Length: 256
Image (cartoon, rainbow, N blue to C red; front, side):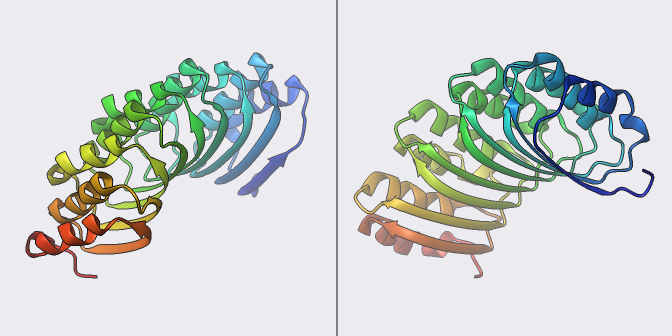
């Protein structure tokens, strides 16, 4: 189909569907692809072929990925990331918290893609996702990042690495931050704020009402960023957030 631009796949398919899709990917004209495959977790060949299909398509710009996939999906995606033309990626990965290799390969896939500008992350990943993201942040081309991590409240290393990933990215301009994070996320963000290039920041923090250190560090992060112009805050914060914000207000560059 030479006119097919937008495709949604939901359901179960034989391995032959994926191998044929991979072999014919270069002829596809699909620009927007939404996939929810709940049955590929134990199917390495289908997972590998799906990854090849995604990365081989020369017109694919917008990818939404939900469901469960074998580790071979992530390793293949990582190895072929440089050939992908994806600009907008939405990922919901609910099953990676105990899968270090898949988490690491997913991070590599994200950071290796030279056209990826807009990333939305949902779900749970192993600590290796965050450490790999941090180590490869300088190569990422992401400009807009939307993160909702509900499982990092008790994970100091992952929280720290996520903060480093955010602050190290030289192209990141727009950040939306939702979820729960360890204090190390906020202290690391504060210490690296001057290197961040973020111009627009949206934060929804519902768990900082009784956390003075995290609240104080968040305020410092906001006020230290030299490029931040647009700020939107929702949630609950300790009094230290407001007192710190007040004392550092003269150094902030926020216009809105």
